[in-house]
Image: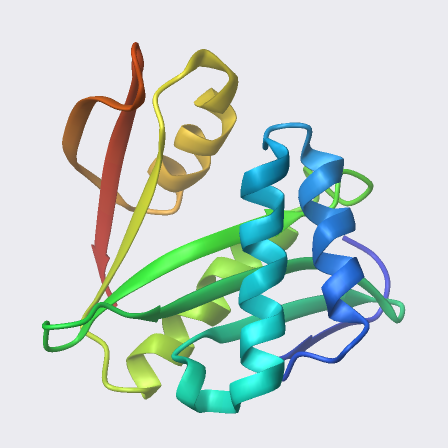
Length: 161
């Protein structure tokens, strides 16, 4: 990847639409899912760190190319969920997502986390996502049949950080 790459952890008001644009560009998500991704940014902006949502953003030459949202799992000690990680379609396939995931893992560890959990669909359209997590060293821990819908199973990944 060429260009000036920077990372930041604080969301800005402009990230509300930036996150929407990144998620829409993937072509994977339904409108209600897109709305949830945006709501998490809004909640963080409104409540700050007390929202429980942490963010990492990747900027390439000043343009936000990818982002991740994550937080602690209630009633656990050191377990964290990766709620969202997405790279804008203009930047996909350039290693940005793996660099971002590595930054998230590092940040979770710095915050006292011991493991990161991720879920995604087992539908064929999500095979690139599954490959991404497999190649990043995540373990396939569980499959919940018909979780999202009939014949739309959830796969749960984990990794010690």
